[in-house]
Image 1 (cartoon, rainbow, N blue to C red):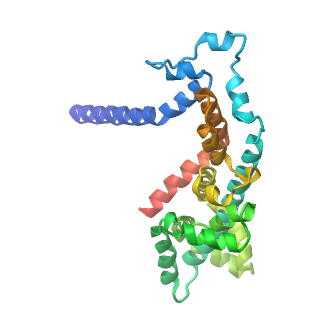
Image 2 (tube, rainbow, N blue to C red):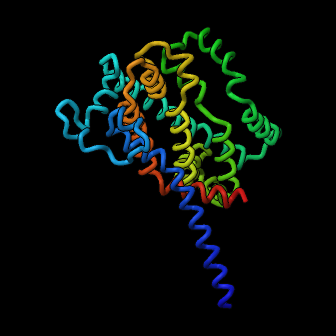
Image 3 (tube, rainbow, N blue to C red):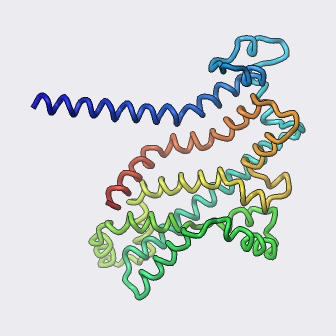
Length: 291
């Protein structure tokens, strides 16, 4: 028995060591970004790299710790377009997250709890779209967007991503094990299907909704390729485009680049901080139900 306990303890130590190692590699870029955002270019490029910003950077008369962040916000052209790109990204990401959750939950609810001919064919057809890479449909989608005069507009940035096949799959899998008895009892009480969806289904899907919402928000917040095609005006560019242009300027300051990346990451950290308990719970429940 003692040998068995000893083996389990050693195994747990190995697992914890491996998890801590993975955690270290995961947060290392974040720590580097945070540290480098308070450094000048000379200190960032110095070898070996010092993880603690130099005191001279904070005390010199011509630089302050906020200089990098001021440069990141103003840009190399001093046009302060950062705030506009931030608003654009928030509008696109929030809108797509809301529509994805609503439409995916409606579709997933219908596929999970209703019986009709061709249901499996419809579901497999939706899943088949996940096998098609975005690059394969990018040009046709761009032509359609241009013909519908949705270039340089929120419509062009949002409409192609209103719903995702993965979202439908995730909602369907979650709702497959949702107790059908609750739905039948509600129908007996005279509730309509849409009322059942709003008052019973959605309130009991908070974990998976939070999970899907965070993933959808993150996908659009990091989306670079599609806005690069349809957002040609400076006023319609998103955060990834701003960071790309900022890094391509001839006189880019590496410290300001890190500050720009840090500022662009804050909304994701805030969102995950508020919804982390639902996100982790939804992921755990989804895995258990899938298994």
